[in-house]
Length: 157
Image (cartoon, rainbow, N blue to C red; front, side, top):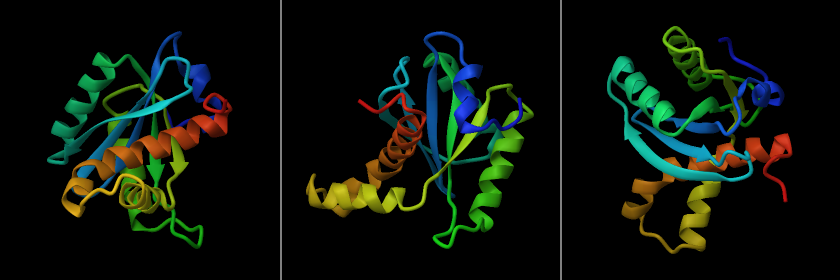
């Protein structure tokens, strides 16, 4: 399945399927999952990146075990609004994954997601740098996915 517009991703989901939010880094992939009503995003894990095939297999297992019907990938757009090398890498990852799976993928502008999460973890949770390193990627994935859900109107109360 090709990359889909975020506004149409729900039409590709079966009833009670969840969305998976991904924060793709060069060394790790932060993961978050929505609830079936597409209201809340919950950070679930951070996986260490290895080779693409191994990473893709882990993600396909998560899709199966968590009833995932679509992905929201954080798109690391530059502050000036243009797409740099990290965006190209994200698009290539999604293109490679689409050769293995028909899951719909949508992108969400993730500018400042890691900064916002780090600020929260420092100021509100009073977390040490070492502890933040263990949770920031999955929290950023949750931030990305929640932003997308809110944009769709499903996450707003």
